[in-house]
Image (cartoon, rainbow, N blue to C red; front, side):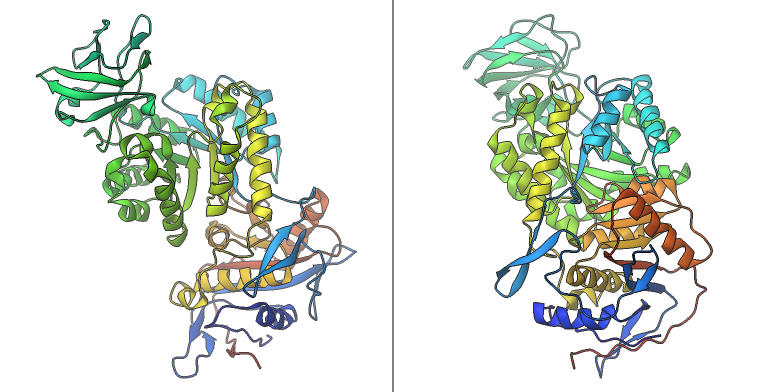
Length: 573
């Protein structure tokens, strides 16, 4: 087992990382589970957690050969070159070629425009990674057809997959049905009543009895996320009297928000529990839970899933004013977050939304949680074939801030140009990724050493892959190492091989991860060779490319528990 040298305790500059690459590239096996001696600063293996890192070359005969010697840093291996410098740190500019892969994932809402077999196939080929079922619309039979079609698609491909996200309706406050749209004029008086079935020129019902208690005189009531607004002037036992500030056409069942306040309804309603059970029965991959205000509801849902023996991850939708003070505890309890900017911008001042988006993304990154940016990303493409330039900038900001995924709602659910909308997201995201600095979100090595041993492995694997410009191949049964690597944002693709279909589907949401199903052999070398052959056959790598192989876990895939004494001296010679 080879001894190699790493520089830790200081960030890796270009000159350092090139010398580190020379050492790493000459090694075949490197174990995880490092400890640090306080006196000497040396690392040693001290736990029973096993890891393997290997830098390998794909030979012309498609066998795996260890790469010895340093790489020419100008050699184009992963369609990325280091051609810009900023303050001594290299910046990456990927060459956008047919081999370029988008790392930011795309979530598409399935609706009347896209619920057919043909459209789901086309969306997938255009770039859809996750199919979202919006339980605010449609019934279980409609969503069942979508689930069946997605599962049919997944069954056809080993290296392609669509995950399924069930988005709960949540405790929405809505106006009642109206026979025809009511025209609200600026300055006129208009009322909301908790009496059911009321619809006149100046009064309409709401579906929420505590609406009377939740609002106070002077509050702003927003209709359709701010398309119309009213100010509360007075109230009685069953009536809220308002004055129209910004008018418009009030149609049936419009969403109501009170600026700066959240409804006192429970986050998970009776309808939501029925929909959640539907998701358990159909083994969906993710729940997006609406209007989460505290961590209690997440724990409640996870306890229910545990009782059902259901392996479904919980994504919390940050869209209520009450969720912001509890953000840390909510994210800690969840598996990820969605920045649902529509209701967030209705309940809080709209100028706060961009700052909250950036804050939530950064918080998720620091806590190693996946994060989705949603709402109005390509709203104009519901009716038009091209986006506004502001929408393109909006997508680019989400990508540059580090979102794992970006989402389309009405654009693909009922829009006229769903395929074009997905294509815009794909091309804009790919172009933005090509301009990002290498490893711009990787934390300081000192902070890595204070965390779990897997973090150290992921950090140094990312450093190795970025320095040598290689894609990463990871073998995983739980998905944990692939997810961890994703949060370190390596500049090349993470090919995650797993022998579990559920893990394959889950991993597709994570930034830069391309999950592939493959049965593992009891022989590691045979599994490695088969994985490379598959990548070669699909054109994901070519003869002469270099790759980084990694597998890790407390329960290693191939090796029995043992202690590997690998000493790594810190500091460069």
